[in-house]
Length: 443
Image (tube, rainbow, N blue to C red; front, side, top):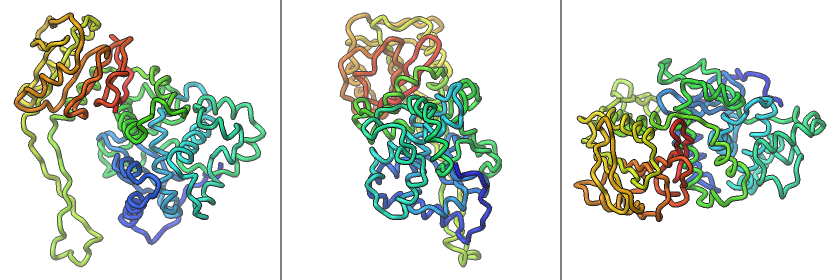
């Protein structure tokens, strides 16, 4: 593929102008402006003279960087910009970074690009763009049109693993067509130009193309997993029929995700911590009179510390008998780690009623044993002096679907052999066992 030189050509454009171009492209995207906006606001653009094209980096401060080589970015039209940022995000959404295993990274990258680009063309609507410049971009991109390894009517049903196998069986097509195609992203990011030069601004290596063991073994895998959840949430809400769509990659998320082992209590602790930490809101101050002649090219950032009131967390434990003692003990450990001076923690157990529970006790026990009703938890939440900021429900998921007042505040811990069928669309969830977790989103 022709992406083998590092762009160094200078441009008269400033990075501020580049950000404005990208923002305007997002605002004016005609096929799915809301999707483009939500993906754009996952992070922020970062421009460099290194790299070949573009990549997406998970940052240690919990943000994403949409990394662009400046010359590559300047060569893109508005539709191509949106195509690239959605392309990058879908690699995370489809968990490609965890699925390479022992496959050839180069061939795996081509397979992943094929399914991502096909999704963008067929599902998002890029196939309907007739602009001559964008069509020229597609003719040089990694698409099934340019690598015809499968009939049109089968393309949306394929996973990256299946495409990889087809590519491996089509060496002649690869040898003939692939050298003429441009990748629209870099699957590895060097991280040499971390923003601001601080630890929190250093990119975590983009793991697409690495083996699963390498990806899982990085110290930042938990941060990457959280960002994967955010990306999946956006696409789930944009495609309500996520679970019914014939797209192979969407199907593969549920199948492949079972391979990812992460500590669920760590994810829960981090989620609670994110609700209680001090917020620094970035404000843009008007320019000093002495430098007013530079305005609006110079904007001065100002950090403002904002104190939040005491936050409330409701922990509700299903008393139907499916909760093992080891899982209960780990939940109790999380509860004991919550600073009492920052959070008002209320712990209950429930069946069709709600019962007080001392989750912070050394030997945690729960009351109940009848049927299961999530509505009982919702009714209890609404009777509090204020609706809880976070509701954590530990359950096997077998109960009628609840109608809740604040679905975005619900976080479900679904035990081994449990189900998410009845809580899809109500907050977020983690599939857990005594030892490991498969993290996902239910919204």
